[in-house]
Length: 438
Image (tube, rainbow, N blue to C red):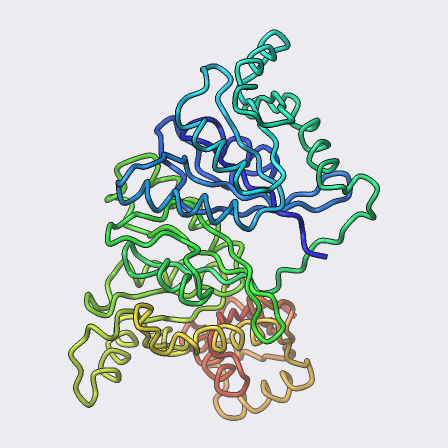
């Protein structure tokens, strides 16, 4: 059984993201006093009384505004309402109902979905009287809450279970999300376009304006019967270029998405080429021990000759030698060129990341490597490497026991890593080799 979906809708700055973060018990959505921070649909799962619920946070709904962002946000909110089992229409209890509230209430009523009118910012018992002014919206039931302090939020969750007829239903089991696949890169390289192309629907807002995506947006999709959680993220820029708090929090969310994912798709703009910032993003992914697939997007816009793709690949490997061990795919999210190959390569890297090499095979490999090239003597000490095993997957950590581990030079350590990659299937994943004293 899939989780019931609850969409939170309302005009800007009524506290939707604050409530969303409150029920999820984590700061998943960016919250700021400035209007219009949330743009995309943001999904989050929580458990209440043994039942798992999926909440959708939406951007502030502004009727009949032709601004490029407000129009797109409105479409996102409408999509959230369309897929929801229950709608929380949130209003600001410190203000009287506005024309936007009335328009949105009419839209929610016409959807035919179950709905609760949530009057937010009722921080005390006296403020609960503020719900009386909202009966004119003709939505029942009405529930006062305070998203900021959590007051009456538990009562609201109980009401949600009751309206969805889950009170007497056996508790659900958490849905296994499978591979966590993060799409990262610099601003405006086509991350949201790729997300929408993979999902085959307009899940996230796409505009030519850099910085359109602010939050990390999770989406579930099925790939040959396997569930994949796709995470679209905000663009990563150099720290020196970040000049506002919203972008700072977007960067934190993106870094957190990388830390929690299994595989990262790092997008490069084919027109701009491989930059220092692209290199630092990939370096961060590798340091965190995540699987890496390099995606060169906007390949349809590049003037090509016979060896254009090979030259681009060689340039990446020249600037960052380690990237020769990771897959590179040339796509166009706009025209869907080679997009169908993205999930297959990512799934292959994910499975490689889960694999563990048998200890017997590793020790056979160690004997062969020593016979081929033994570690050089250092400070008059003969170095013996006696035993090898893999102690961790995702990332792969191999331990070699030696009599003088600190004397093994860096060049020989790199030699061991390269030999590991040549002898075992480790394409697309970081490899760490630790030398310890026997």
